[in-house]
Structures are given as structure tokens and as C-alpha cells.
Length: 171
Image 1 (cartoon, rainbow, N blue to C red):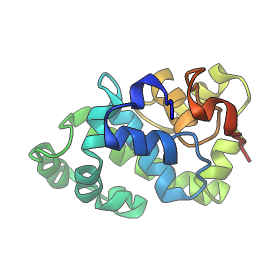
Image 2 (cartoon, rainbow, N blue to C red):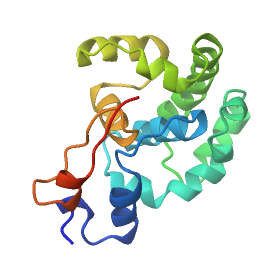
Image 3 (cartoon, rainbow, N blue to C red):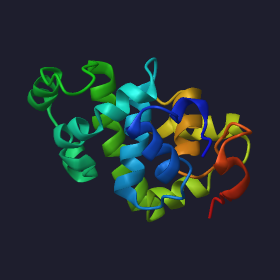
Image 4 (cartoon, one colour):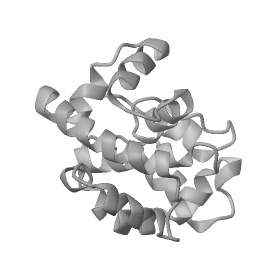
């Protein structure tokens, strides 16, 4: 079975490619996790983040939005000492900020999915709206997140078995 070139040798990447990437996700906690992992991936490889995913889950309380939103300087300092995660203070602080924003979005829109679904069709406009709410969310973070969460059809290699058989819809 032929896959995208980036997912041919590493078992974690193969599983992610085959079972997760581009699959429709609509629950708040998994959406928040995907968004934060994409944020941490900036400037690094997805492989690096994926191999640290379990450590991230443990460090960030399974990405429970309510818990991450109340992290304080002491918790941030603790995270900066955690060798299992990517220790970038700006990204950690952005994660706390983004958890607070996510809670506000859930209060105002009912869910993160409802918020992401109402974004304008134009990518530039989507980015403007996202940047009003989330920190450290540039074009590459947003694009990667939209593909990962199934809001956009991910760009499979032409020879990939998923390029012809999978249908993705943003509902």
C-alpha cells in the first residue's frame, strides 16, 4: 500500500497518516490538542511533535481546556523543565492564552467546531479571525490545523492510497 512520502517508515507517522490526518474531528478537547500540537510544530517536523505527543498530553493535563486555562507562572516554569516536551516559553504561554480563548469561544459559539465552521472561506480572512483569538497562530499553523482536523482536504501525494479513496468534508 502506497502512502504519502512523509509517512512511509515511521510507525507513528503511518498510524497518524492512515487513521487521523484529515479525518473529521469536532470535539473540543481533540480540536484544542490538534491546534496546540500544530502550534508547537512550528519550525520543527511533525515527526518530532508526534513522538512527543504522549509527553505533551501528560504535561498539559490531557489538553483539558479548563485546566490549561488556569496555568500560572509556576506551572509554566515546571513545563519549561519537562524534557519530554518542546520547551519553548513563548509557545507554552501561547498555549495557556489559547486555552482561555478557547473557553471564551466555546461560551460564545457553543463549541470550537462551531467557531471554526463559521470562519470565512478565504484563507487570509480565516487567518485574520484566528489571530484575533489565538496567539502563535500563523499561516502554517492554521493551514496544518485545518488539514489535520478535516476542515480542508489534506494534500496527499498522488500515489497515496488515500488520495483517491478518502472524501473529506467540513461539516
